[in-house]
Image 1 (cartoon, rainbow, N blue to C red):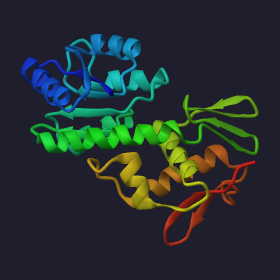
Image 2 (cartoon, one colour):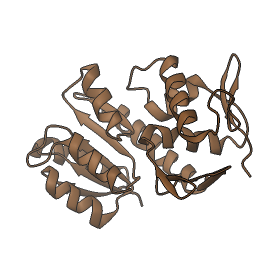
Image 3 (cartoon, rainbow, N blue to C red):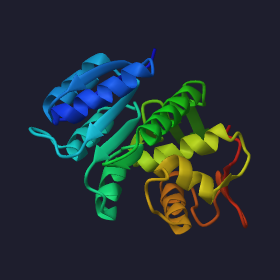
Length: 228
């Protein structure tokens, strides 16, 4: 039974969400402010979190970033009345997996919950470590090293590497990157994917101008060369 943590300060919304998810067979945990939510997330290790942004004591952006900083990989679905593009970008850059603007339908909420839980199940059986020459990447803990020196990769860059690894040498389209890594609630462009690949090459490739591992598939996207 999936365990879902709801971090929401409005009692009516928190109760409604809990009832909807419990009816679907989920075990529901709740927190009414950011600090309590962080404590429960770290202690309870839920399978999924529904996270409001406007929270007392610690806002949703800061809470999400702190969880990712501590290496917590559970999917986070942000729920908020804020619908501006800059708010969505801030939430996704902080490490959220998807974004849902209030008011929303029960059907859409449950569809996104199911999609995030399916993604987690696939990742559980997916590649955990990559070796690319002098670079080692631990996808589970979201850490990377070159010759023992730690590299800084963003949450989005780790998610892109995970998607490439799961493809097992097959090409991954730009549209697939946007759908899986950014989520259909965001509004990035295919150029966003190219920019992130360029950043990854600068960090991981011996010669970014002639990439050995992160290969371009012209007219489609990118693939990960088989690692050794």
